[in-house]
Length: 138
Image (tube, rainbow, N blue to C red; front, top):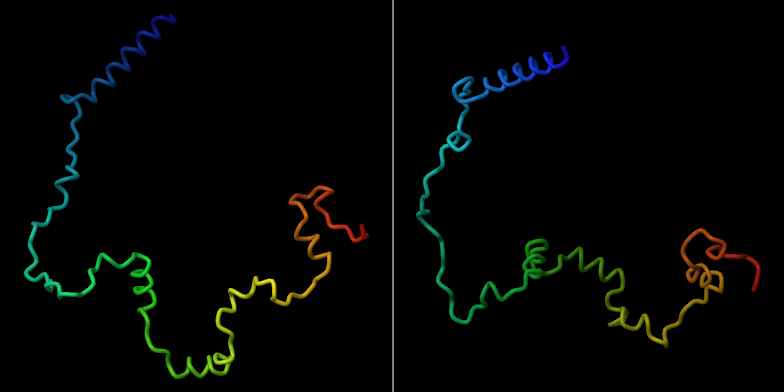
């Protein structure tokens, strides 16, 4: 009886699969390449190309980062009157030139924050006993 059920199941499976063949059930599907018509190639009537000027810099000689800065910020422009007034009020004329280069100089005055700040910065990472700052003097 068991063999008979297996044979009947096999015949039913083969019969159902034969319906998927070309001669059996044939679906008419649209061709995905025929759905949209391709536009014909057309040469534009005016390229608006200008012949190069003698002595002018070549466009490919500028760096991509400079081109990006020009695109973002519009290149170098004159400061407005309000911007000049703000800079003058902030003390533009009193500022030392090269203040960033003198910040790490040995002659620069620094404020001593004490050993606690130094210990916190030098503490190892983690949550172990060695990573905790102690308040008792060493």
